[in-house]
Image (tube, rainbow, N blue to C red; front, side, top):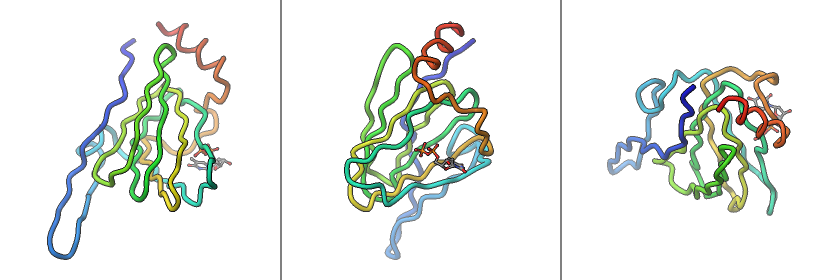
Length: 137
Ligand code: TYD
């Protein structure tokens, strides 16, 4: 099977004297139909989120306010992305372990997801994730 890579996606910005507007349409601005949106905020200083991978769900993560880091692990390589712009998203394919950390005060992390919430789609054990990745290669 083809293992997709994570990538930064540039989002459109419509700027005028009233301010900036970034529209996100499923299948156009992000590479999937959007079935769920959630956002995290009020993350305590030094707090982390994530710590899991998805069997199927794909996501685009956007720092709509403030900044944070996303550490991605495809089972062999770890890459850190600093997100700090509301006009840029990080596309995270399925079967990629992610950890979010170094949140600035007031950071808001918006996530656009390809699927509805399904607890069964989560891999929350890193050892189990590595085994699953290796068995797919
Ligand atoms: P969790 O997966 O731990 O959040 P994160 O990956 O951002 O650290 O989810 C926290 C709680 O919220 C957990 O009880 C599951 C619930 N939840 C939903 O009900 N719906 C959702 O879409 C998400 C992402 C989480």
